[in-house]
Image (cartoon, rainbow, N blue to C red; front, side):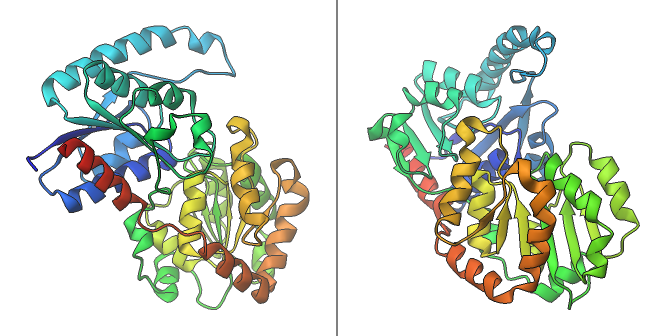
Length: 365
């Protein structure tokens, strides 16, 4: 196959960015000569994370609809129009053979223009409830990669391929020992370690509970690795400073080490978080984000809870139950082992390769 040029569009959160990078890496493994250009939204985390992974990225002046403030949406139509002009310039310079959309603000204008030009387009939909942009784009997509059953209610059945969600190779192939991981975070070897994750942007409800009880973890002989997320991180990081048994930062780059160090994980239940935790085989307490479309995070978590592979606490119950559930599970090794064994059964480790093979087959035809 001759060298191909592929645009990868999307971002906003780690749940969009890391699958995109995983897909690009898998294509590179199969066809090293493939050229990639990522397109993201200016000011969003993809503008940092994609170059760190070794790929070039162009930023669009684009934003999403602000439900909390109608005034903030005044410039939205103008930004959308401007983004289409920016995308056209990018296409004219790069001349892509295909475009991959992973969700996020920049996916829509990139894939829309690609479809208008007759360029093959591919969608990765990680969630069990498809986003509106992906639904609109799906009608003319070449192929749509999903991780849930029943996605034909959103997309044409003949275009769907159920691959699972791509998990970062650093996590899939991790050989980091627990001891080395704990050393990396400056924590002790013989204390139960709790990993707190609220997604790349943070989870206020989880963070507030951890902040309120932060002084009690030491007396219970527990230690924390706490990813606060970007939102209101400064206050939480300040709280953590005084506690030697707490490692805290707004983002964890070395997630393979974080999973290796952890005995228990507290996490939102986004599709990518769930996929990673299945691969990492960790006992997890899910606190689903209650405002996700169609409450799909609760659906994600409940699927595992019903199979005795996870614990779930609703967001409006965290103040009453989360701290107690953490401390109870930390003492219960038998429960931890059962959850770990059961969640491992749902791990998908080769989704990136399946997607890469399907894309290369299609664009090579």
